[in-house]
Each structure stands twice: as C-alpha cells, then as structure tokens.
Image (cartoon, rainbow, N blue to C red):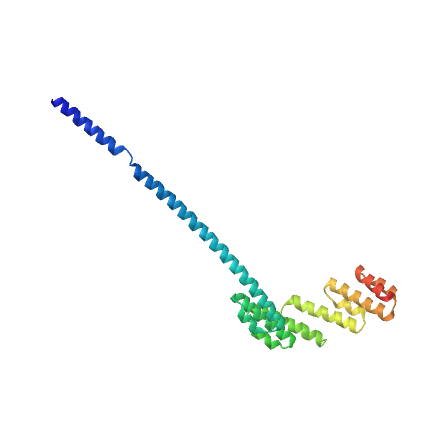
Length: 221
C-alpha cells in the first residue's frame, strides 16, 4: 500500500512539473499579436514622418519661389517696401541691399550705399559708384578711390577705351593692362575708323573675325 502511494505521489509530481514546462498558448498568441501591433504602429509612424517631411520640403520650396518672385518684382519696380513681404530673413536683407545698390547708382549718390547691411556688398556698391563716376567725368584719377584692386584696374582700362575712342587715337589703347580689353579697344577703333571713312580695307586691321565681318558688311550697305 505504501509503495502504491509513493508511486502515485511521484506520478503527480511528474505531471505537475510537465504542466509548468508546457507553454501557455493564449499567452504566446497574445505576445505575437503585440509584436504585430508594434511593428504596424512603427511602420505607420515612419510613413507619417516621411509624409510630413515631404510636405515640409514642398512648403519650403514654394516659399523660396514666392520670395524670389517678390525680390525680382521689388528690384524691377525699385520698391524697397516690397522686400518686407519676403519670409526668408536672409533673402529679405539681400533684397534691401540690392535695392540700395541700384538706387545709389541710379541717383549717382555714393552715400546711399551706407544703407547696405552686408559689408561686402557695401564695398562693391561704393567701388561701382567710383567706376561710373570716373567714366562719366572721364577722370581716371577717380578710379583711385576704388578699394578692390581688380575693379580699380577695370576702371582704368575702361577709361582708356573711352579715351581712345573719343579722341580716335589707337595708341591710347596701349595704356590698357588687360590684354583682351586692349584687343577690343584696337578692334573698336578700327571699326569706327573704317565706318567714318567708309573704307572696308580698314576693317582688315580688326583681329576678331566676327567683328571684321560685321565691319565689312556695314560698309557694303
């Protein structure tokens, strides 16, 4: 009898242990459902994020296009207050600075350049003013006010082109430092000389082939 009891007790213990090791089907299924839900939620969030990024990029591009159109309109109409409608702060500053450059050169008033916020653009405004002033007054020494060395050379070279053509003196072209501008000066001189004398053979002195043909065709007419 005792042996039977021990056997039953061992069997009960074995069955109880097997019950503990057997996985709960409902819990496993629930865990699977949770994993599927988490993956689905993660995918939806990623799709929403991508959609929002695309929408944000589209809005940004549209704003840039609108701002650019406003900038162009402001400069075409020479209306600084239109720049206030630009949303992008950097482009708004650029619009106002470019307006003051045009205003300073149109009115030939160097002091208007002082309204420019960007220091580099302010220097360019002042230098460009001195180029125009030097050519308008045909005064080479005004080029000395230019801070940028390249623009200073350009001012002097342009002065000598005008001086050579005004005085119809080809040798004044020799004062030009830039070799390409020197050739243009000489070619332009020969065009004017040929047209003034209506002598197509003078066109042969022109080095630029296209300008030479134009010179000859104009005299033939």
